[in-house]
Image: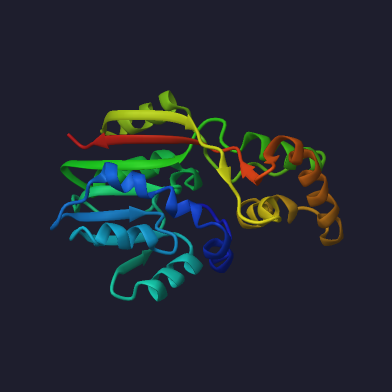
Length: 248
């Protein structure tokens, strides 16, 4: 995955929606006792633990040392590995791959697709959900407008259904189901959008002198309030790509 810096404490304190929304994805996975499953982008381990409750043997994988360290503290009886999805070297090891809100951080998506296909046993399945085309478009547009000329490139990959389906098929998968859907996501607290930006998009602001960052952040929040804030508070303009694929 990329070099995103993760604050595991902020992630757990303010962004629990990441794994809470993933519970429905586990139902699609339908893990079975005795299966060996890889949780790609496991974060701090909450969904890895839920999969393990089925009786499956689960390995949690994440490229962030902070996330893996917290996952190991949270669930010392489970196994976690520090690794990137596009660099893993497993071969025919897993009955299923599960990934929630992680694959949009893997900029080398082609290598990741090949690595995922290689890691599955014949007949194995991939069940994943992540940011798709148009995800957080309003947020990134506001940030880029506040930064001025020559902003850094995005640290995310948000593909369309045809784009990602083609990528998986080129790697050898059969795509059985794919859906792109809007999922406006509430952000916790009065500072919900600021916390979200500091967790997921602060690298943009690090291109500015430190003294200019508060003013730029305030400009972003001011421009987003009419779009992404209502009587209940802030929300993020998420669009999620959910898919199921198999290795023939």
